[in-house]
Figure 1 (cartoon, one colour):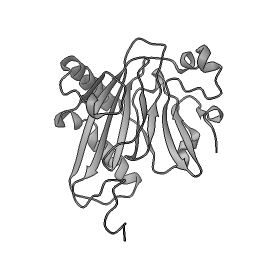
Figure 2 (cartoon, rainbow, N blue to C red):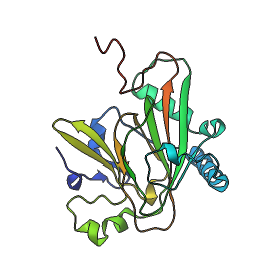
Figure 3 (tube, rainbow, N blue to C red):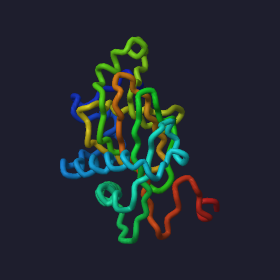
Length: 223
């Protein structure tokens, strides 16, 4: 079992710890510039209108979270489905359903340990306003043996403990995305060194036909 303090990101380029590559159910992807630009246009449009607040249905201790329209989802959802089905060797030509939103996280806000509904989920970071070095050099963070300021982190069951899998994100990682099983627990720690919003798109996707969401056993499972 490796703890957070022992983990290192990939030369500061990929934001995730190298231990994440051990798990084939986590898919990491860098969005192309065109898709990222379209998402940034959407995030600005959504924040101006502030319609469809999604915060009451989400775990985040975050003031501004808004649901995307079906039209806005088209910018990212097909890419997520394509990456996930190829990575997991899923052969399915039926219809997919989705529910997506945008998070505008201010400093001191956070997302507690939680999971999602659906079959698989994604998070894509479109704006990260701080330098990780500044976050990690805060006195109360630097003196800790588990420095976590600003980190996105998975919590993977690994009996008898939990394996933390951190993402070391900062302003150099706009456009990175991760796709994962919806029931995989994860969290977002607060950041402190910027007054700007950290913006991410997130969502859940599931099959419309013959699909049983994770965590809900079928009759066959109970025999």
